[in-house]
Amino acid sequence: MTQITISKSSSAQWTATFNNPPINLIDPDTIGFFLAHWDVLADKAKVAAMPPGPTGLHPWADVLVRLSRAPVASIAEIRGRARGAGSEFVLSCDMRFASRERGILGQFEVGMGAVPGGNPMARLAGLMGRGRGLEVILGADDFPADLAERYGYVNRALPDEEIEAFVDSFARRLASFEKHALVGAKTLMNEVTLPPDTVFQHALSAFFASTAHEGTRARRASLIQRGLQRRSDTELRLGEAVAIS
Picture 1 (cartoon, rainbow, N blue to C red):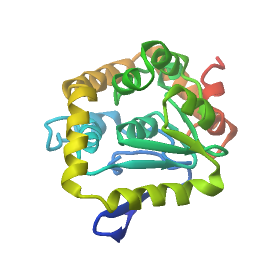
Picture 2 (picture 1 turned 180 degrees about the horizontal axis):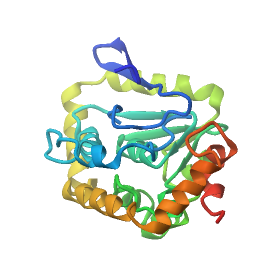
Picture 3 (picture 1 turned 90 degrees about the vertical axis):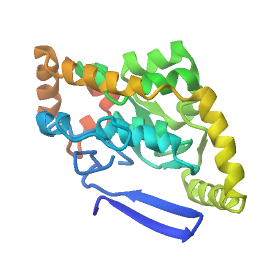
Picture 4 (picture 1 turned 30 degrees about the vertical axis):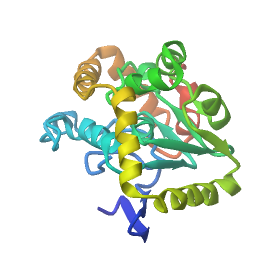
């Protein structure tokens, strides 16, 4: 898969780099800027009809669930924009570190008239509480790295010149420990923090239903006309753009 490059520092430390230019959209050819958001022009019938993954869930929900439950420690290094499905992906990782100068996270879907399909609600509520979680979801605005750190959206915001070395050092530290201890501790953490798998299928159904609304289609068309999915001011300032009628 050309959109994802895997490099192996050791048998215990792998790095996945996403590259789907011009703005790292997530489309039906991606398991799955950092990860901008789902391709809103993707054929929705094709997306909805994709065969289920190993969990029995739709492939997108399947990826999110399996990533969060995988017997490895997953770390997202965010040096760009991670919105919508990009935000959902990093929320499924075990830990998130964002560049103070470049990292921006958000769930813009409600501003476009849609329900977020990867159910970030189920993860944000546990990370930051119901009120702040609803601020992220219903407000549909951008959260720069420093604010994301204060809210609990990410573990830490770090200077861009330091983040790569920090994440690499932390990953190497974990890789030096016994795998059975890492897996055992994560499994127990999962038992008391992860939402049930079934809530993710409910969210996808709500997403597909919401995109059929006339108002949603009109908002999407307006955003596309103004530069959505192209390197544009609309994409750079999507949190602002969705609030412009």
